[in-house]
Image 1: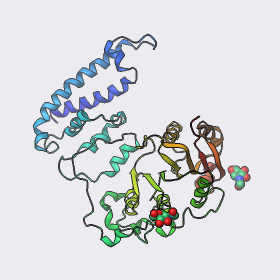
Image 2: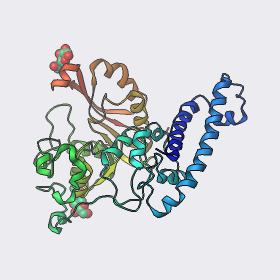
Image 3: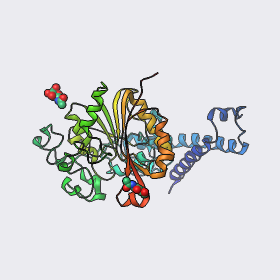
Image 4: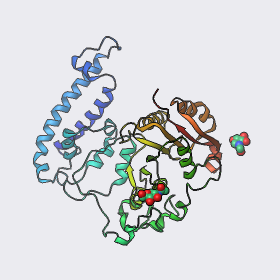
Length: 385
Ligand SMILES: *[C@@H]1O[C@H](CO)[C@@H](O)[C@H](O)[C@H]1NC(C)=O
Ligand SMILES: *[C@@H]1O[C@H](CO)[C@@H](O)[C@H](O)[C@H]1NC(C)=O
């Protein structure tokens, strides 16, 4: 453990400390060293600490960049000195900002950025998802080559344009990335994860078994009867993309957001010829305002999402929907009381027209244990007044 490592540790600690201290005040008032008249005064000792930390960071960053300049140039930054602030992270931070939530998880961030530039990236998709789920999104970019499967899929397995193929080709997945499920084939996933059995998937969205279901034929009929065209939709928490698959057969384009969470959901969506967006629920959709005809939220949108995140999610759905567009909550679930006390007022704030509203008891083990209920709702965004 040399001087360099010590400096890096200090730098890291200082960065974290600054983030916490920054919460106390806006940086503009700190630079003046004088609080604005409207907010309560910041204790002098805090300001002093913050300024000291800032000066230290500047100093250390300067030291760091001179001492690693040679290592970076030869691409051997991780080989000998093992810096705890990887040089590529510093380099990246100069060209693009890093989400503040990234700094809240320095251990994960530094593991993610600890790689050898210009060579094969580590098999660490679990690490990138851990960061994304904690709000570190977009991730800092890296200069390495993402692992790909060793053989390419046969052209016959990809040539079909049927989004419900009888089986998904195993050669499209880099199975080493999914060591936790210990599966090396789609066949193996059938019993462990939902959504990979194409026989089951091909029956979804066609019929209704209860009031909580809305079939695609019903949906299209509703849209048609209000002279509303459905061309482009967003499926939030899309699993293997079956909603998009079925809608494709009606010539509707659907973007499917998904995280992988231990199974190749994104790859399955892609191999079905659909668009996978690797995207968490706590981030702004990468879509412009008012351009989408329909947003469907699957049961991945449920009471496990903190209410504040949920509220931002609904308002982002509103942002991307065009006037007259639809929000479909498909099997949203929460505790019975919370539905009335928390979620109905939250949904009500949007001011949408209720086209369908159905609730029912969630009767699986966890539903019974927690007194959970389902809500399926189709809501229509009003035209601007
Ligand atoms: C989808 O588009 C194709 C090609 O334009 C057309 O032949 C087909 O009838 C359309 N399908 C539906 C369900 O509208
Ligand atoms: C749903 O569950 C509640 C209690 O958890 C019960 O009182 C009610 O009768 C149930 N409703 C139906 C339709 O089964």
